[in-house]
Image (cartoon, rainbow over all chains, first blue to last red):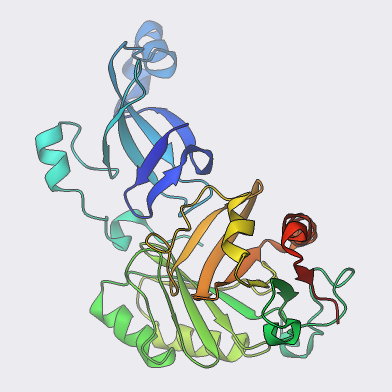
Length: 109
Length: 205
């Protein structure tokens, strides 16, 4: 089991979370301009590294917020947890590990 | 909606517990589980770090708006639980939720906020006694050790696979457990079973 540090709630057991796939995928600005191969690449192809993987998780049974986790796929060691919107590269992201403002997140109920 | 105040407040585990809010001292300090009269429940979404929102909410809720993660602030008839960086659950005395909601909506007019009546969403079970922590730890992965989870703290977590909000009230320890209403009977039965070895009593009048 993983002990995942939710950026807002603190350390919680893995069963409270749901996995959301590879992080930092950017939807192409103009999908209709892409070839089928390029679109298929965006839709279906994901990195599958043996090593450090950046991925999205949601604290489904807790605060229900999304965030990013940097995990080693061999050892399962969690190297870093950072909020959505933070830069992918460590030096910038760790310094910015502030809870995002509600106005950026959007308020839903 | 208009008659919400007049609705009978039937407990979620009424089939098993015929009386509500029996004070734990009636059981002589032993481990007890009671269902409290379902409180009024309001979900509040707003930016707690926006001074205007904090002032508006504070004016209605007697200054209560915990901005620290996993904490609870309470006064005589209102309890405010932190659920997320911009989300709170407000528990009011039964029947008071309509009035509190109207005041909140008025105070938050013009701000990016949402006030939603979620009364009836969750039941309120109170587990109290020296073995309460051990009982919960049979089905909850949260670290409930006093150095990690103290009175005045709350968490949204999982108890025996059912999502709950857990709130530690005092050092007895006393915990308020808020399962979704449809899970309340299951949680009650699970707790009754988990309490059995400590001679715990699920109080039914």
